[in-house]
Length: 479
Image 1 (cartoon, rainbow, N blue to C red):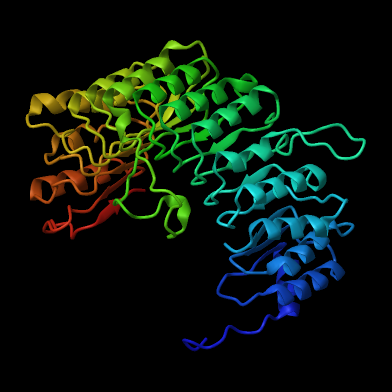
Image 2 (image 1 turned 90 degrees about the horizontal axis):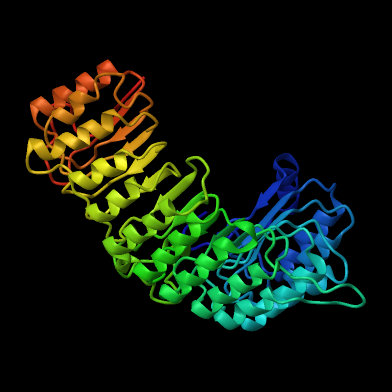
């Protein structure tokens, strides 16, 4: 398309043919689709054989007419659409109400609804709650991130609703995945989530994404309650950049330790330049300036780890624990290392670890993936300091992936220790980027390691601004 030219007209027959072959129709925002075009597309889809399972019209200002047409399509007998993304930032409460009016009193097969960045406030959430209760009986995944909901906006979704003579029901009773990241959710909203879970109104909830919200320690304590509600069904909890400090981290650790270990616990702090958008924001500015979890600190990481290790949850190694940028130092790392065998993956980039902390977490039994990127003190200043790291690494019998990038490693001894295939025998990938390994001796050690372990991918490139070694700069090797 010529720069500045109008987007090409919508080719409905071509779209129908494509959807029949792929069962998925995703119209990029660069293509023009307004309300009239959406009505035309939905009319054609309703008359075509029902094969489509995914319809993504995100980023298009379809207006209320388009939203109504999509609702009517969903309510068509035999409609097989299970995943829907619809509308732009102008969608708002009017769009949700129009979608609900299109579905009318019927129901549909929809299982996943993406309403990220749709301008939904409390009024929009109320309309969504009524829609979910009356017409979305199979809804299992709901994305509401980057909407200015606030605590008040979340409330209608956490209440019992009734219609006609039917029994009252919770709009999110069957929702398994809920994303409320960057929605101005505070401690009150987090407490409402925990209370709803305790009342059985979130009976299926297994995945909660609540990052980039001003939760603080009180909100962290509410998330801890949520971890315990419903017999510990919540398996994935993401609360990055939420202003959680030591007290909140300790509460979460204690809760996680009193139940079977969750699969993911993500409390990472800001790992990006200040002022840039959070990961969920797709290069758009956040609604609120995101809070760091950097105040968790070493004491908070230690308290969280003590909670994990001191509870009676039991179970094998399953937890993916992410604490990057939270200020973990050697004390917290030693506590994590003593937490037992529940941790299968650990992420501690941009922390404050030295050799003792690195050795402690490398000694975790059952650990399969470890990231220590940008802990420049790990390399130590003397051979005696690095010795425990080498010993722990060689004894890491389950470790498969290890990131030691930017860890101040500049000699050959760690590499030489890994040449023995019995050292870290399951290791498949070791990342050594941004370490000063440009010397001929280090390059020779890298080559020897690759030659001795053909199944091990050894990845290295020099630090920014450093000269390239004899190997020619960025390098990776393996079988």
